[in-house]
Amino acid sequence: MHILIMGSAAGGGFPQWNCNCHNCNRLRAGSFTGKARTQTQVAISADGKNWCLLNASPDLRLQIEATPALHPREGSRDSPIAGVVITSADIDQIAGLLSLRELQPFCLYCTPAIRRILREDNTVFGMLNRIPNQVSWVDIALNREFHLTSDANLRCTAFSLGNHYPAYVPAARASKLTTGEALTGLLIESSAAGRNKTKVAYLPAVPALDDDLLKRLESADLLLFDGTFWSDDELIRVQGSGATAREMGHIPISGADGSLKKLAILKRPRKIFIHVNNTNPMLDESSEQYQEVRAAGWEVAEDGWQLEL
Image 1 (cartoon, one colour):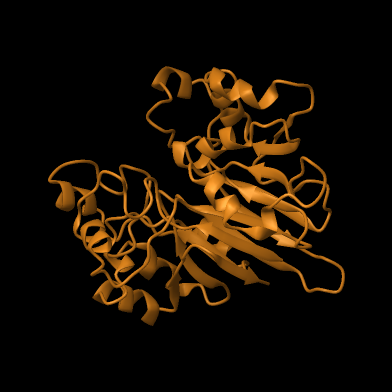
Image 2 (cartoon, helix red, strand yellow):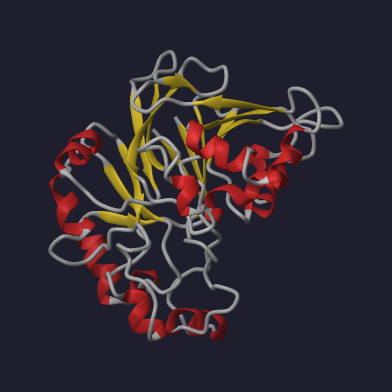
């Protein structure tokens, strides 16, 4: 299985355009021990030729241009991108779909609830269906395996992570949508000929961890997990106000109930934090937080990583 980490930051990227926090300020000044990052984007393939995007970040066009494997290959119009799987209706996960509006056919996989939000409530996404068969919308059922694109060697299962809808979805609308379809995690398995079965778990936004989720993640060979915030009150301390990490739908990394301790029991997967907010101190590779993460066996995703399983 081939995995491309095209972007690894949370919404706004790093540095964020309007942020003067300690991290962003030092990165712009050239005194930061760490790297700039675009907003989280991952692509996956069983054969290295046909690719499926996991969500569609606001930085998608530039990310495609920075990734030769996703460039057109032949003819006047072409793309190796055969599909996109959407895990939530957050702007971070869907804005890049509008960069794919130039009449290039692909499949778009999401839960029925997310499809209704995009197609029925937001007319701008009508740009994806200006001609017949431009985009094939495929409803995915929770906990039921489906093939990604036409490749039988790449199979995916989506599972619920809760009912956290983005702020632009009215409460009255959210209450009419199917429970559990607002936010999903993905388990993607490849069984290409001549290779052992491999499994990737992709969870860029996780509001809570329970025993059922921990058991599910234990089966993965690679875990790409929500690394948005280091602490629950991170934004409040940086900005002086705002919501906690958990109120925003993200379990923090640190603390007795944080992901670093709760996921320590997972021995099988390679563990990588992704979707890292610009305020997160572990972005600084000279920080205690970064050293703590690395000592615990975790990595912090960077733009441009190419992984092979």
